[in-house]
Length: 180
Image 1 (cartoon, rainbow, N blue to C red):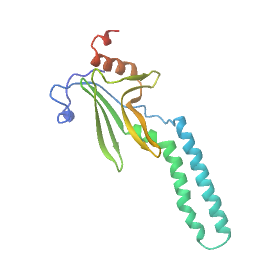
Image 2: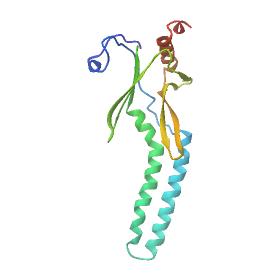
Image 3: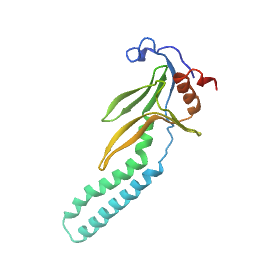
């Protein structure tokens, strides 16, 4: 699990004295968070209404019913993203913890490859959600909403060895913590 050398692909990313302690990825199994169920229901109503409208317009004759295809497609897209978007993103996400930073790498279509770096210091707030698939948060960001902003936690989510990763981060913050 612990690694103390720099692989060649990290040569231009890590600083000279930085060493990789852990690498992993989120669980890749299909999972829909409960908050996405609202989007699924909304998408069903959106697509369902469009389908109803297209049926009524088709019965009137002509090709006017085809204007409903856009709305139907949007409804189906909302459902698909709510059900499969998170799983797809997790399958293209990779985590690395070094003795100085936490890295979250993603490789998604359209967006491309992206590497986010988060400095781990003795004042970095760490939260740990234990379980079979644990989560360790170590950063936050502000996301704009229509009513202002909300805070989103950032970290290594749905990882099998979350307890070990949490202990490694605590050791980085205070070497005495890791002895517990």
